[in-house]
Image (cartoon, rainbow over all chains, first blue to last red; front, side, top):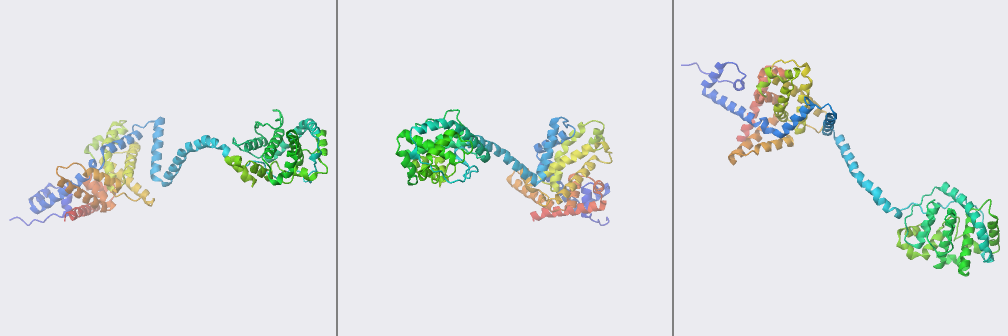
Length: 363
Length: 193
């Protein structure tokens, strides 16, 4: 009878199953004992199950492992010393940073967003904005506080005293001198204000004239709308001459359409005259206006001085209506004048956005 | 890991001789081994790929100073284990980036593996359950036990080599292996009960 068999411990059976145990005699003992053999078989079966379950081929796909292996080779034995290799190295570095840092991911997303938005912004800036440039402008006229304006009381001008025959001669003599002088004054004024004017192509007659006037004041082109009124200044004339001429045109427009009650004095003067004389009255008013702006101080041409003397006189109140007060407070365009234009051409101005802006500005 | 990578076919020795062919063959054939190794330890997919790259780069760059002592497989797994520990330290400094424990990628791999066609639908289901239980049981193991199980059972390294690699007494290796296997078996049996 053989000695009683002492069963192997679980740990020892495990060592034997993992083939870490040396003696073959122990394996024989395990096989000899049915209990130990069964336990050993179970253990070996379990280990086989584990190996089969966790075998790499069942965890990692061949394609992904191959890709990874090739990237390893590209970084080791097959490393490219040229720019492609540098690029790959940089790519790897960028990928590693991307994976490891949340902030890098945020920054990259932001960068991507900005880059993607760039064409849209460029399209808006280069295509959309130019198309709509005429619709938006920040300043139609220079500020109304003019540093060159004289603080003297309005001059007493009696237009009724003017002779229809004298005025043209005076104007012909004085316009050139006035133009030169005014050009200097206006240039100085514009330089001191630096007022930008952005006006597109207006739709109505009034806004065309106003826009042309604004462009001139801003130093822009002298293309002015055609008119059946007084003759336009020559192409070489100064901007001021064009501006004054446009003022005359606007006044004509005002008179032709009926002037609001506040302007009855001017209406009375202009409408009482034949067509030619009304233009002369308005031209004289423009000259007087230039004087009231303070643009004619200093070396006034003799002809203009004479004209001013002639229009000054006992009928101060009537002239004031044209050169100051409600019609011409000391600014290139006053609110009352704008309002009068708006009232006269309400239907026209309301039709286009620039006209609406003028109305809003005049309120 | 193939036995053939040891002794006469040590890839790093071949590199020292100026022959990169063996190292390239080693990388191509053992990338899945190390990828699976890191995934089983609990790395996420992307992290496992980074670790594998780091491992091979370290082996390649240290080839000049390499002196073969024992099995090359043991050396390679020691480097892999160090890379894993370094990675774990980095993760510890980044809150919110804990271990993968299989993670979504692990689940996807599990699904892909189990989705392989089986001869009988019932057998496939049983196999799927068994695999899931085993994965769940492995995930409950601590890092030390998991590493010993990985090296001893799956990589079939001797206890002595594992002890040397992990710088622990051989008795500790035995103890950890015993407890790891017992816990896994309990996990597997628990599902069957």
